[in-house]
Every structure is written in C-alpha cells, then in structure tokens.
Image 1 (cartoon, rainbow, N blue to C red):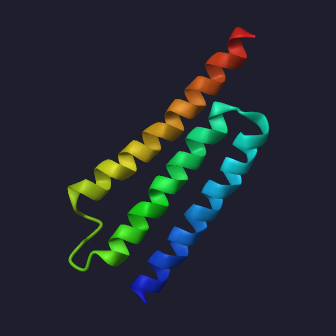
Image 2 (image 1 turned 45 degrees about the vertical axis):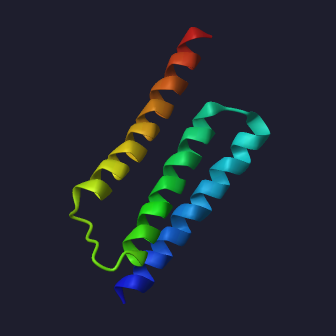
Image 3 (image 1 turned 30 degrees about the vertical axis):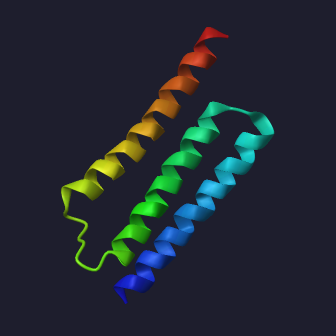
Length: 87
C-alpha cells in the first residue's frame, strides 16, 4: 500500500512539474522554471523512497532534498516579487 501511495504522489509531482515546465517554455518566466524544478525534485525523492528498500522519510538526506525544493519555491516567489516591484 505504501509503495502505491508513493507512486501516486510521485506521479502527481511529476505531472505538476510538466505543467509548470509547459508554462515556462511559453513565457520564459523563471518563476515557472523554479516551480517545475521543485516539483521534479519532489517526484525524484518519492521514487527514491520507493526504490531504496531500507529508506525512511525520517532520514536526514530526504529532509535536506525537500528543504532544497522548498527553498527553490521561496526563491521563485521572492524573485517574482522583486521583478514586479521594479517595473
């Protein structure tokens, strides 16, 4: 059951990544690129949790990778707000 849920979450993250990547290709806005990368990283983490047999979400490596993806989202938001305020 856990592997099925990990697969579903990975698929949802990958789909969101493709969604944001599509908008980045149309607009070339870095905001969408950062979001696409963050969701792709989240999808890879879920796949790694399913593939590595003795892994757990409580391991520090997975927290650090998730922290990196959340920092990418924060960078995207700050970058977008700075560019809007300059205009």
